[in-house]
Length: 367
Image 1: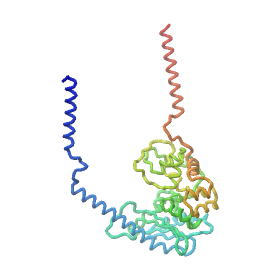
Image 2: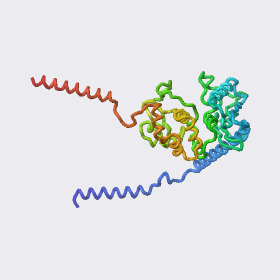
Image 3: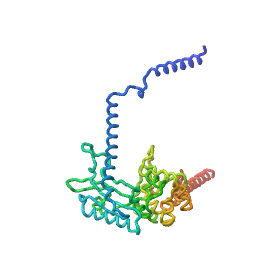
Image 4: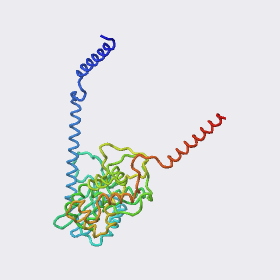
């Protein structure tokens, strides 16, 4: 056998032997899991189930106790834990009144409540996750449409030092309080939404009515720029939307995911104006301001799905309007790989300068 063929045969035989030996090694994934890992996973699953069940019970307990306190006729009631500092209670009440000032003839019963986060909690179950939170309860009953914002707070030594409205924290920091009535203000103005609009709102779209809008461009606002951050799904979709990818605009509205992280986190660094904490909570109020109350009410009370109701009421598709709306805040960005025009001009200028120097050197050598 020729030397080259002997070498090839040796290599092939060796590869076959190594492969056969490798097949005898057990795969770590298929290896038997230690009993301790199985026990730990079972305990974690039980803990998650316990917290989920307790959370559902606490939500039921809060609704069962507080919703009967709603006014009997359209209007608003505010009931806040006396454990919260009086100044913070006054602040919450004042903000709620300011948000409802534009509602001249309420169409729903509105409630603003603040309770101790221990209420409805099963003894022995430790606190888990965020201790101060806000929940929204909305629907219709025999007395008509209702909407309630139920916040909880942490009480220590008969004093509530933190609350779901962040009123106490904002007072200590010298900041203005954020929205209190939020989405309930829309229901107060227009009553119960149509059944398919209500289903969309319950899926997460109440987030689009959390605050009143403004026509001030986002570039003019005094906001901290986040140079390095992880974007949520809405961040990614808004970036694509205002760049001209209309399907992202439609998806962002029809499949709301406020604050939800994508399966693969996207790290960004200095990509222009940040779209985090963007204008989504003002989407519905800006929609109302753009088209007027009559057309907005037509959309809100429609029996059709969101795309059909939107087009019928406003005469434009969801995606097209949302893209224009987003660009009014952020302007139209470049969303693909690109080189800054100034850098291109500087590069060409440098190349021309170097070419000129090279020609001058060559001419001097030729003399």
